[in-house]
Image (cartoon, rainbow, N blue to C red; front, side):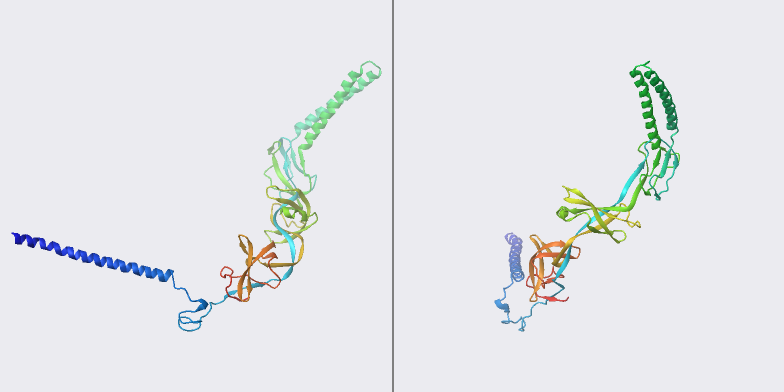
Length: 383
């Protein structure tokens, strides 16, 4: 029985030895993996520094293969040579075209339209009858008042005769005379109301569209159509407040129509005496003859106002200027290498920017590839 128990306990020892050997092998593999990771990190992120003076493993001025070391290729760039030019001081703005005169035709009295002399979109002359409104009741009241006036006038004559003979007092005569004057005043009011029933063109112009027809009932304030004087037209635009002192009546402005890209010449005729405290701009109005109806009221236009000319101004292409937190810079080509230069700018257009400080005539400014070059990089001028 003791022998049998020994044979049953012996197999439990072998797995214990095998398990201990497996753990030792596992720890050895983990140690090797850690060492390999450290070596990889050292080679990738902490390479050995190169010797001073460009010496490599093969000696001074030689690459790893033993040959002479080669510099990186020069970056090809396009440049602009700075030169003195005459610069026109101009202000670019956007504006709107306004009619010289414009009015909404409305009814001043109530009634049905009895006559409509409107041809939409057609010109009319000042004083031309446009709309007639039923005025039968007003005309009847006028006739009645005319009869009253005749009666009061007869009474006034009799009272004057009696006053001359001192049969009545002056007060009685004044009452009769006052009736005549009051009746005439009422007659004038009725005549004014009758005139309102006929709507006439207040000035020469072009009619707009309408929805009114003969028989349409209108009340006071009802809009019937519009009338616009479009020869000439006004162009309204705003300039920054810093240019307010330089803008004067009579200045020439160039107007560009957005729809046709055609350019027209106009003249400033009025300036707003105040600068808008919100936008800090001054409203300016110019006038254009518009002989052939080139510009239509409500159209959007671009305005260019010339304020003078600067001689010997230095300008560079817009794409050559690099905006920075502390100002502006350009990149120059000096001895075949890129050199940054701080500048101050002035007037600008879509293509050029004036440089007021930092550049001189003859400087070579890089205009392409400015995002790829760094100070000291070799560059090769291609254009």
